Amino acid sequence: MLLGCIADDFTGATDLANNLTRGGMRTVQTVGVPRGQLPDDVDAVVVALKSRTVPAAEAIAQSLAALKWLQYIDCKQIYFKVCSTFDSTPAGNIGPVTEALMQALGCDFTIACPAFPAAGRTVFKGNLFVGDVPLNESGMRHHPLTPMTDANLVRVLQAQMQGKVGLIDYADVARGPQAIRARIAELKLAGVKVAIVDAISNDDLMRLGLAVRDMPLVTAGSGVAIGLPQNFSLSAANAATLPRMKGHRAIVSGSCSVATNAQVAHFTSSGGAARALDPVKLAAIETAGEAEIERVMKWATPLMATQPVLIYSTADPAAVLSTQALLGANQAGTLIEHALAKIACGLVDAGVDQLIVAGGETSGAVVQALGVEAMRIGPQIAPGVPWTMSVGGKRQAVALALKSGNFGADDFFTKAFRVLA
Image (cartoon, rainbow, N blue to C red; front, side, top):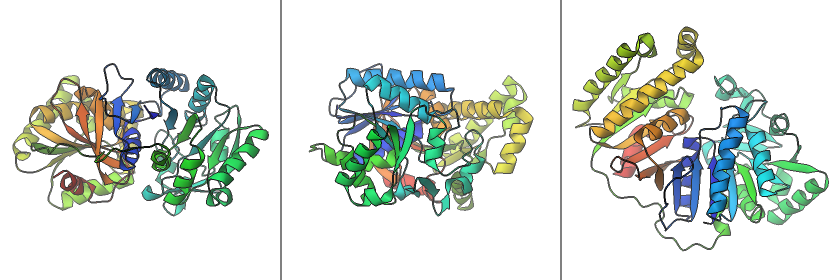
């Protein structure tokens, strides 16, 4: 195995695997640490965890378990994938997990770079931008679990780490791989353990990819993966090819991001069949919650024979805060995840074989409920989001598009099904 990756959430894992596949690496994404065999014709594997917002000790334990398996299959390089908006708190989990992986690998230096210019994430002078605004002025400032109030990633990461954090700024990146390596050597002499790296274009990511060719551990968002396939001698053709699917189509959305709100609005305003879940009804009593799920399924089943259906809990920030105040933030999130996962299983059992899932936490809940063990990566729908095909598990093969809440244009849902047609 050429590259072994550890991702801190499911949609981020898919995003990473997509970039590797587009670079010619035949890639499989697993749901947690694999228990069975992977296909033989694979160059890279991405182990998808759900470790971004769990306690730091638990995130470290999950990540080290994944690393142990990746070492067992003799991966040549390890990639710790974090969110392109560097989602974290002062306690972690990016810093603590990075340091734990470094220690396990005997690694004295690594880089950290969440840049993904194609998705609007750039880093300049150590500051992360989302589109044209600094991270702390973006919608991430109000994230319910990991609010990002500082765009300076050197400060953000230093607050989480014991080792010293430095910067490889754009002047060095623009001069190419040799200049980046020279800067790394300087930082190591100064006692720096991890360096944030500037990148504002795909060319920067390609230069960075060459510079970290021999680095045992790379910590980054999915964008840096664009620059890694060039380091391996590959001959894989049609790495993103998937079989054609002919069943029903559906979307389940648990994300409340600005982008997903716009996608739900576009789908419904275009005449798409959509139904919202009511968290209060789900929470009333267990039997009432089950009845709400049954009502949704009775609504969806006859419609999806002729058109895609959308079931969503997506709402604007005010509605989300109101629900959280009534039910509690954790309980509201858990209720929605459980309900959407159960609905997704019902949809697949009713003949859906093309399923879009919006939201990282929702995607994790859905693939676990479906019993998916691994996914082969297929064609890209939008930057950071490919179609995948389930591998293993108890159900029939299903095409899955697992979308991070912030990714995709307004017409993402309708465009996605056209890509697979």
